[in-house]
Image (cartoon, rainbow, N blue to C red; front, top):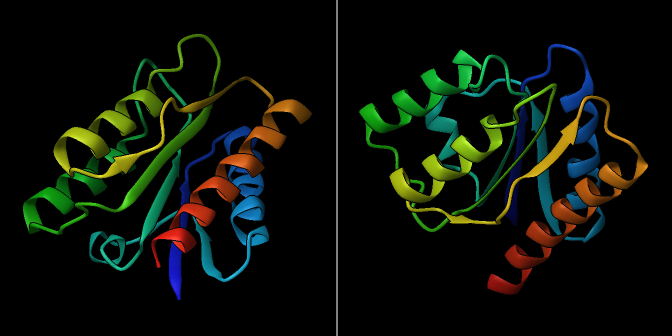
Length: 147
């Protein structure tokens, strides 16, 4: 069975709401295992077929936890090549973090990324939450088509 990770960080709860909707969408398409989590070890990332990361933007950057996770994946030589990647997140005034995450996934780890990242300014409204569900479903269906 294909495995999807929805990994997120959320200080205010906005990105968490988006992550829950992404996971809901991924589960809706059928025969995939979906894990929703706010922390994983670097080695764990290699066990997933798709990795969707939800990150708010603070001070023009992603949370330091994600920076450290990506550094550890690189140092340990964990291959993410060919896995599906996507990014989403909320922001107050700039919104760069999900873009940075996609860039790292695509250029450093050679993942197949879903572009552009999904962004919500402040609190995600119903339109954004529906787009999150669609993102999760799209990734999940792509995995099922690979099998």
